[in-house]
Image 1 (tube, rainbow, N blue to C red):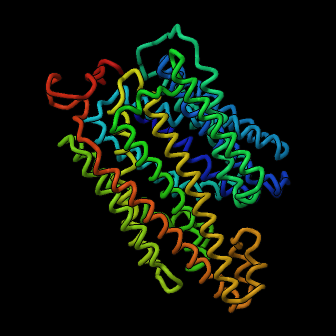
Image 2: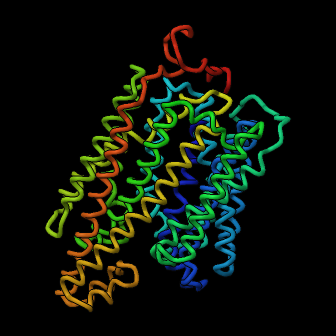
Image 3: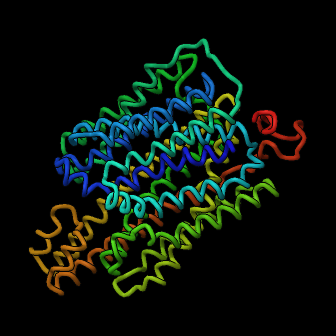
Length: 505
């Protein structure tokens, strides 16, 4: 029952952006403010990333249950207010409130699972977590489109309320964890500096190459601000009693390595998946309405392999092989996707996506498992939040950098094929609405299809090259016994076992 409630909470956080993304054209049509459209997504992402480590530390200091319930309430308040927004400015502000709550939802779920289930047993539940991701990725756009068409865009936010209420009631009733009350003051200075640094990094990746040129004063200024804030953050964290992000957790070799691998997985995964629907809609002529269904082969591979990896990890206690194998499959999948062109069939691209999904299935939950097994119980929250944070920042960087590569290549190919007319068509961002594309002359449509195919080719090829770093890092992981295994305490180098589930729940 506890896990069911946690899965609902995780679904809330992951599903929201997928549903809202489908509703955005209708929202802009009613509220106006097209020039602020990107901020509806950016405000949510920014607040989620900035609050993630703070929620993790608060859970470690004051108890997981109360902090988690607070994040659910905050998310529901943000959802209700977003549904009542009367203009774009209000919607952006309320989305930020939603994002603050979402940061606590993601970290809370992972940390509570870390408290209740020993790492050795956690593999059995990996399929549930992967299943939530599959439901969010595939079902989100479909649900969002249906809600917007039949109930109105405001219900894309209101739909969170009944789901959140169920999670709230269930967590309150069935989750029983030891209460904590830290006498140490919260590290406000560290939290502020970390938030400032993360905000600067996310804004660089969001604005760079779109709102502002990469070498503009705004982007360079944000870069300097981010570096200074993070440098001061490191100084502060060395001096306070309860740092918001304890630096000692990075002394553990496995934790540092898996954090790097998680960053690269986020970088490649979010960056690459952004362009798969675009390729299939523009080059292969698929419907934009069912864009979520186009990712079913990828999600299927992820779900099946995650289930297998989880079961084997539970039975054997071995996990390094999955990180090494998953990193290798990630490279193979991206290389295969880079081979796609204007003549590639949907069946062929689906097979390539299965390979990529299998690589992700080996890595997604295993990286979090290793991160949690590498920290002491008292640092479970910050360990979970750090792994989540670095994966999120990796995703932001991946989308921005791959977007710049894609845009440049599309513009170059269009100029090569149709000259200055191609440059004018792609100067606004290198993406064209499928409906508008259908009305163009065949020669221009063909040129644009080749340009998009060339752009995705370079994105996936660069993704494969970057994944090689993660593959190399995976070989240096040490197979530290998972807590909760059959090994005797004297023979294990891991942290002592935790409270049994039966006693905790």
